[in-house]
Length: 384
Image 1 (spheres, rainbow, N blue to C red):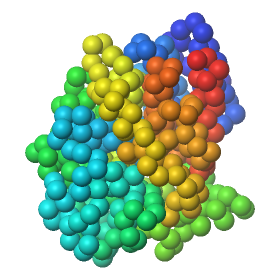
Image 2 (image 1 turned 135 degrees about the vertical axis):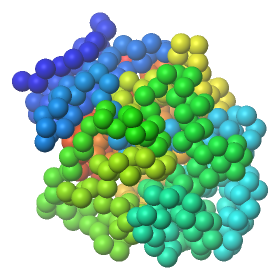
Image 3 (image 1 turned 60 degrees about the vertical axis):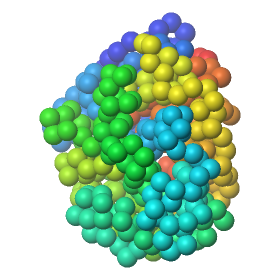
């Protein structure tokens, strides 16, 4: 039986029970879960193994790479710049980034960019790993290229390019790269253990990811439709094969990927920091608030809903955030956040004052919400 560490306030035992069940029934390896209510932490749990090869235990300060849960942090940075009047969701991207107007993209808005409507789901022609990790070659390629579809006519998950596109907007209007902006404006004021571009000194704290089991049967058939060779999803998720998202050569376990700025997918954090960040978008946390109610309403306002040109299934997005629907079951209607590949999840729910974070290192293969994250959010729902 796994030893559970941390604290749970009275009234939230159901979350602890679900956390234990994830280890006992759902194949958890190492994980942490945190819950804030009205700016106060009421759940802080961790357990298991951070590295299955060495059996290093998961500790209070173990961090994990959270894949697309990073997108929420990036969306918050954009929202903060909107609140400051430095960006406008309705303005053309080219108003801030002139080179982006190439190939007929002069009318693409910031809103369309942030809601996966721009049709720039991978670099064309493809780039190699060295170019991807250098960031600037990706940004330059995306600015110059023709969209995959007419922007605004449909939406398709920009699995990796979302982050570089949003990150370049931050750099154009603020002068700082998004990793620096996030560190200065979000992480430092809140005291977060959260990086987009991990310093080498922190590498020893990162849990080692274990890839998802190979799907079979109907699950394999669906996965091939979503991410098989030549599909929009497969090309978007790997930048045409430059990055390996599974298998023994998984790119996301490497120092090089941890060190670069990949604002859609390489955020490294703790559950505590993920939950704290979301709590500070909807209220004060130790005197710090990241966005006012009017900005939050803009960030979480539905922009697209329906079949996704990359993920095939229905998706629903605001300005960078996943919104509650069958394939992204957050706490309730009105909540906003983002799942990460394999199972990680962060979200906020303004109606209940909840900020939630869950990180893990045993990747699951589910599409419509990982069963471990769903079990935890179901427990939170029963407590709130």
